[in-house]
Image 1 (cartoon, rainbow, N blue to C red):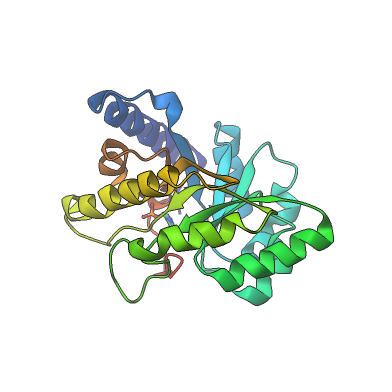
Image 2: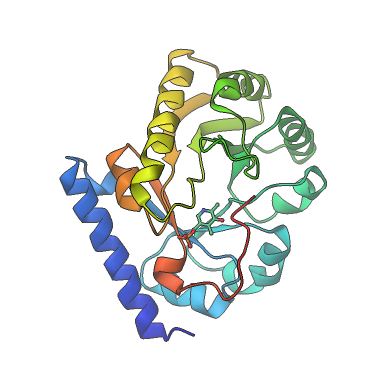
Length: 240
Ligand SMILES: *Cc1c(COP(=O)(O)O)cnc(C)c1O
């Protein structure tokens, strides 16, 4: 169990990594958003991070969003959904998050559209792309991403803001670089298609082990869990 001080120190180390990686690739660190991945982390520890300046967290499970909602709802902190979203959870997830980063199929786009029509709302989404080719990972293949973007574009309650990918869990972070480069290329192709309601301003890629490489490859948002909160006690599927 990490102390509050350790969480604050880890957070500041992560911020330094972001600044260094930005400087090394000639980028402005203000163009990088830090999302804390908070699966399994109790609300009081998330609160410590928010008090230390974190403004965006990501949860993988609707159940956890619901459980932590009382504590987190009033914090000055945006919440995104970053896990695999089952179609039957759509109604619930919309109560808690301003963005679903894991839009990976037309059926899910349809369900979101229908529910949002009922609520008379819109929502930001990212298209989740499987750049590692692992069968265990959710996400549309890079070749199918443009088609999914077109389908999402036809659903007027969805605001596509960019792409998300989960890199290979590699011991050598260099092995993940081609995945991140791929995501950036997919983003360029979709941008060139100039679809209605589709922007490619967000590339959500990079985690604790490889955020530096993701930043070099054009990430605009990194998703960090263990580097701030410590190793998770049990293996948790990363949105897969
Ligand atoms: C857990 C998780 C992360 C963060 O992983 P760490 O290696 O702990 O930094 C990022 N993205 C997703 C989708 C996750 O589930």
